Image 1 (cartoon, one colour):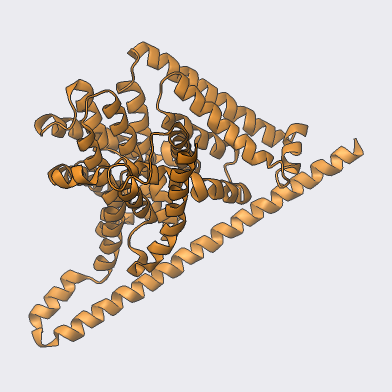
Image 2 (tube, rainbow, N blue to C red):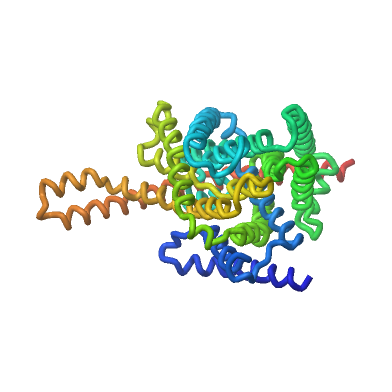
Amino acid sequence: MTEVFISLSVIVGISAAVPLVARIIPKQIVPETVLLIAGGALLGPNMYGIIQTEYPAIEFLSEMGCAFLFLLAGYEIDPKSVTGKDGIHGLGTWCATFAIALLVSWVTPSLASGRQGLIATSLLFTTTALGTLMPILKDRGLTDTRVGQIVISYGTWGELAVILAVAVLLGVRTTWQITLILGVFFGLCVWIAHAGARAKSNGGKIYRFLVSRSESTSQTFVRMTVLILVMLVTFSSIFQIDIVLGAFAAGFILRYIVPEGNEVLETKLDGMAHGFFIPLFFVASGARIDLRAVASRPMIMIFFIVALILVRSVPIIISLSVRKCTREELSLHNRIAAAAYCTTALPLVVAITTICVKRGIMDEDVASALIAAGAITVFLMPFVAAVTYRVADAEPITAIVEIAHHPESTKEIVSSHVLLERRRAKYYKLQENRLRVEKRREERREEIREDLKEKFFREDDKKN
């Protein structure tokens, strides 16, 4: 037990130190997730051996971190973003991406063996790490923008479709068995969501009791949320479905029950998840990376990143350019930025490679290289998206033409275009702040309505 606490102490120490390290880096261009993975890789069993991840307790906590990551990812998603026009186009684009990925996996050197290896490799090329992206989008103020909406709609299917495909195509059961299990699972989710939403809308005694104890030491809302999460993850584990599906479904259910959101509950869940469980998951995932193996086979990592960009980014750019509404609403650099964000991959890369290694269809060295590549995309693709915004706003083509006509004024032309970019960035920031204020006002109005509703129920109880 002492060894477990030593490893846990080191992991928690890394998660506590990473925000400080991230702040030191100029402009904070390296996401904390990448630093967590790097810390785990350096101190893990394949390097200095200070962290040992084979202990059941560490493995369990890591799994819970993964569950909380996908719970929050599912909760952040508005169901309309899945079933609306953007969501439908996102699903169609993912299907096209998967077909291209199958072709690429078939004609290129295999990363995993057999038919399941071919499918697994193809799924790796179609993933979007939406759970990892959401904090980045929030920090950059993009969640309420059109680019953010596109990223969420297309990225949801890059996560949800892959999760379902992993359950169906990489499962150990026959097709009819997994179909039956998923049907029962879906029915369970619908029942929980309907029961929760009905209890909230009716304002029954049980719901009022949960509300009254939500701010006490009972923390009833948090406990009910964790109950839903653990129950669906347990169902997934019993029937040998990846727990990611259960966690993602728990987030969807929570959003259905509380469609307008609950700021207090969100704050508490963020504190639990991002304060302990999720950083532990990323550090433990990094500890599985063998940096020496990655260094000895760098082409695998390069190949994966290039293939991910070609297979995932390009179809999204084409899809956004073909659709009339997105072509008119988004400039080319906005479409490229949205596609770059959607090409961020990591958690599902960890999940799929873990499945492949356990079944003996993928070498651990290859898995290490793929996880390392996924970690690089978490840094690279949001950086590319941000740079795309800034470079395009400076109108580089116009600048080049002006310099060609007036080379003696190169310095002044460059300065003027840099100033143009800064002014536009300031304007966008003001627009984002305005949207954020409007959203906050609407949330506050909803809170007032809820408070009045609760007050009415309490007065009604007293009369009865």
